[in-house]
Image (tube, rainbow, N blue to C red; front, side, top):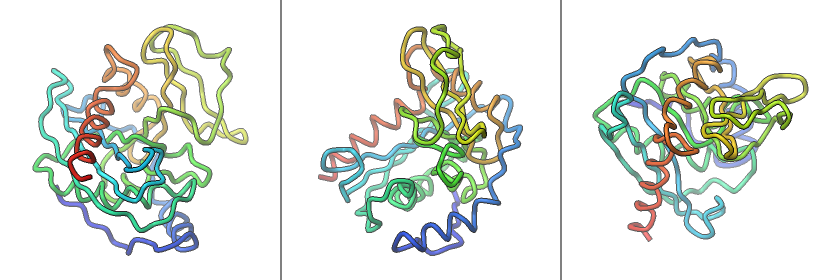
Length: 232
């Protein structure tokens, strides 16, 4: 898969903030996005150390699945030592270079990317999913295990599978808390590029028939940890 990066990777906070500001207008959150994608890729990154993102050795995994069968079509990994500092809100710059290398190893070009992270639900409205979508030109959304920017009213989120409540930040809807399984904690969906929020929500739910996390995220998480263990 071809991924062109039309900018240098920033070396520090000021450069990264300026790049986010420059690229933010390129992210299209209107969609509608693919209505029935046949292939969807999950992307995740594992960190050495305590696993919380502070380690410098990182392993990226991309798993492409067939949405009709949930079977794995193709997968790829890459490992690297990140040089960008640990800065909240700028994690994308620790993860993107190695994620791009993993994507470049694919023969398949997925119709939709679901990354373990946020898109619009970001303090500067340009999280990992936005940047990844702008770089690849593919519909992209973020599916996160925990919220970052934006909060939802717990009373508005029913316990039943498929229930959701809007994530709002300063009066702006930036994503959704989505209950993928009845009675379990929600996941947090936000748009990245070329897809709208209802479409992204529907795809995440359909890819999570049995577990809290969509199959794309579950498989990419496992593969990234395996790749990290092999690299240590």
